[in-house]
Amino acid sequence: MFDRAEIVVKGGDGGDGAVNFRREKWVPFGGPAGGDGGDGGDVIVMAGQAVNSLKMFTQRRYLRAANGKNGGNKKKHGKKGEDLLLSVPVGTVVSYKSQIGGNTLIADLEHPSQQVVVAKGGKGGFGNARFATSTNQAPQIAQKGEDGEENAIILELKLIADVGIIGYPNVGKSTLLAAVSAARPKIASYPFTTREPILGVVEVGQRSFVLAEIPGLIDGAHLGRGLGHDFLRHIVRTKMLIHLVDGSSPSPAEDMARVNTELSLFDSALAQKPQLVVVNKIDLPQVKARLAEIRDSFTGAGTKVLFVSAATGEGIPELMAETLNMLHSVTKTEAGGKIVRKVFHPQPRGVVTRERKEGEGE
Ligand SMILES: Nc1nc2c(ncn2[C@@H]2O[C@H](COP(=O)(O)OP(=O)(O)OP(=O)(O)O)[C@@H](O)[C@H]2O)c(=O)[nH]1
Ligand SMILES: [Mg+2]
Image (cartoon, rainbow, N blue to C red):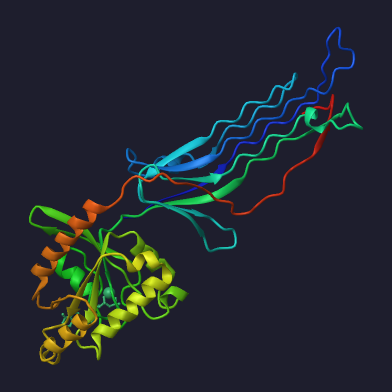
């Protein structure tokens, strides 16, 4: 399910500035005329619809963009190095590999054409024409081009689930996933049984969608408690949520509100994600006896609820039909194809400004 590649990328080096003077027959003291070096090319990772695996990166692990050309005489600027565009499948997560452990997320390329710069090319150096002042009209110096950035990055392709099941630990998320798909997550009567997202494909008549159990949501999840941030990040990628609450909890409506607070504290956009609120475990007699009361507490909070038993299957076909309906309306209104290009600088580097005199070698 997970496709992964580790590569090293390097931006092109900037071209060197030139030291040169105008020398023409009738202009004995022509001014400085050394042109600037061209900038090195950037390495860019872009989500392309035609690509569906990261296989090509398992063969080519070191990838670099073209260097900028050196500056020339007569103030001729060096050509910019060409960018290197790496196409990856939509749904690829790009992170920066840290030497000390703990990788840093650079970008989550979830829309076609979305792109991110993973290694900036070095700036071209100034030619001596740039260094002329009133007191030094014949500067002998030019700047070396800056080195391109070099970064180790990790590409990971993750299947994007259409629907996420969220809720407190132990509410029955795994039981629900197992009831409607071929996925077989571990089910147990203690919290945090599921420690990473589990995916299953749900088929309803002719249609199907990918459903994921999102583990680890508790109070303070936005601060990294429970299973923390990683899991909240998975929710961002879904189109809608099934918010499961345990009918046997003292106050199911309050549980829902708490989980929603966690979501909005992590990212306010998450709280806007369409949700189907579902009360589980209605097979238990103590829950059955309270159905009306539970319904009222949700209606009081302005929320419509569905009632199911993931264990016996009661209410599950209705839940899946509702899910398909909601998914259909969300997909229709979704905005598509934004192009965003972000530049990522893991370690800002100082500008390299070694100076070079005329006649010196490269
Ligand atoms: N009576 C009853 N018990 C259920 C139902 N659904 C789940 N359970 C029980 O509740 C407990 C937790 O179920 P899980 O499916 O593991 O819950 P989860 O939300 O995935 O839990 P974590 O992964 O630990 O967060 C298990 O003992 C299940 O057998 C249900 O509809 N009725
Ligand atoms: Mg579970």
